[in-house]
Image 1 (spheres, rainbow, N blue to C red):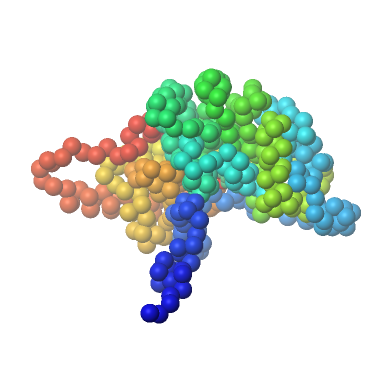
Image 2 (spheres, rainbow, N blue to C red):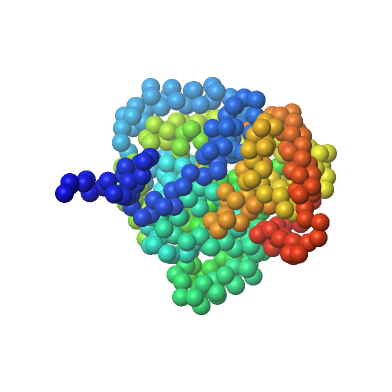
Length: 440
Ligand SMILES: Cc1ncc(COP(=O)(O)O)c(C=O)c1O
């Protein structure tokens, strides 16, 4: 009898280590967004897919000066390992940034992370055992879903309308999950200029949701990358401005400065914060001292509030271009009208499938993110996220024109193959209950 390697029977032709991966890696499937980045980077494609900030609106000398000072004047800190909680001076400065959204905290409450994405990872690591429930808007930020499922969390979506997460739906979700004996660990929410829907939770709902979570002993994770990128009026103040004990707040410099620096932060109650620091140290020893020093120098010397105003102007113009394009080319459809941030959520005609339609769109040289990327449960086929942050207004208009060609072509095709006599009730799509009625 011949002896076989113990891993041989489990392997596939493609990956001999297939059988060795931890069970939690089942949640690490490549997302639509990831696949799209490759396609969308071709110059002839108008990409309305990614959420890349338009960093060219940042004068290079502002950061170049900060980087020079970091190396020349602060090399002892900037080029060295640092604290697992983050640079003390930067944590002070982060308080000024958060004060713009009504948050009062102490520098001791802040933990600097490698982007807010890493804060999400640390939170998931601290709280999720296999099968634990995470409540999240339906739809929700795609890479948060990936993180939660990679820790074997079970993302349960809660309905959203044009004013954000629906409190009554949250109550009902909690009651039915509790009835089924499930353990709910936290609510993950993006209250301002939601990714992917672009909607904003009003103040009354913010308070109601905090109250529901408080009453039920459920922690809130408030993820707020876009709050300062409003177009006309600031959004309601952060939920963290009204609650300290039951909330972890996440912020980032990715959208108001530059994502390449990879600096974000978490603000958490004392005990959680201690654990976050330990988890941060276990993962990266310390967040990048260099990036933190550059940002600290930038905040000290540059008019960073004026720079955020500049970003607002850029994104407002792009939002307007997208809405004008939608009105002109797709007047029969519905979409959200964001008052800030990067995203519009477009609802397709009945029976159209955004995921199935994507290859055709790419052939027509336009890319978007199918709604399915933002649901853990397969929902979202009849919707798509359109990002207006990166392409120029002219490209956005051209992208929407191309998209309209694809949608009209696909609709005609579906119409042609429609059975003459319907025997089954029409499928209104999984999003029927959560889509906002706002028409651009
Ligand atoms: C809602 C949301 N959370 C977190 C992130 C991650 O941002 P960061 O660059 O700070 O890791 C993003 C990025 O697009 C986002 O949209």
